[in-house]
Length: 131
Image (cartoon, rainbow, N blue to C red; front, side):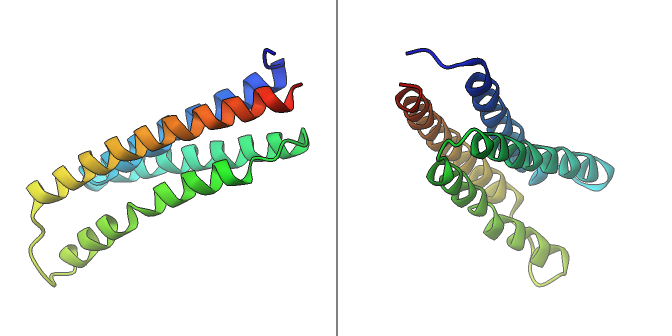
């Protein structure tokens, strides 16, 4: 059974949140100064999209908690990279930029694949709940 208009909008917001948040998180690791602040604001825009889409699903009485929890776990995987970068800026050690770039690219790829699988499961869940 096809999704209704509200489910399509909510699912689209969920996909947009994934795209914006993970792409900005990856860029955040690679930019500096003013561009860092702009990318940080855009990344938080993606987080807001997650919140808005989750609230809209909940208002429509669709159980989506496990799908969002998986996304939040994938977002948390970036925290060690951010800590590595911050500790390097504090002068505790020299940041290996090449290593950091590769870790960010691999992690982003894995998270996007994981998010795509999660989105497919959410889509299937939405189709079942529409019955």
